[in-house]
Image (cartoon, rainbow, N blue to C red; front, side, top):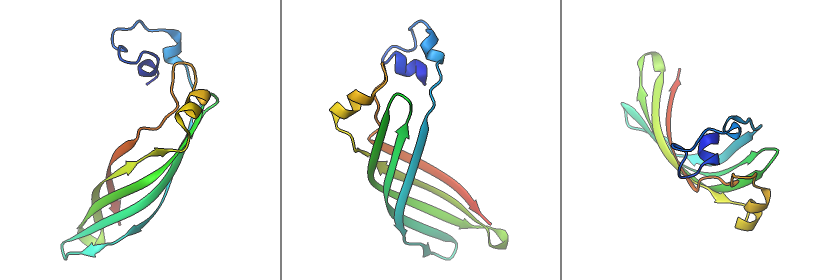
Length: 128
C-alpha cells in the first residue's frame, strides 16, 4: 500500500525507496446505526437494511472523518439444527467532514488524507 501511495500512477515501474517500507500507526473506526426489515420466505430469509454510518482514520500525520448512508441486502439460508448462513452485499457512500483545503493541511507528505467516496461490501456470516 505504501508503494502505491508513494508512487501514484507509476508504482509498478518506480524504484523501491526506503519510504515504501515505512510503518505508520493508523487507527480506523466505522460505526453505523440502522434499521433492518427481516422477511421470512420459508426456506430463506431476506434482510434489506438502511444505515447511517460514521467513521474515520487517525494517524500521527493526518486524520479524516466521514459519514454517509449505507444500504445492505442479506440472504439467510436455513441450515440444520436452526443455524443460518448469511450471504450479503452493501454499498456505503462516504461524505468527508473535512473540506479539500482541510484535507491538504493534515495530509502527510506524498499522501492525501481521504476516504474513498464509496465502498462496496460483501459479507458472509454464520449464525448458530
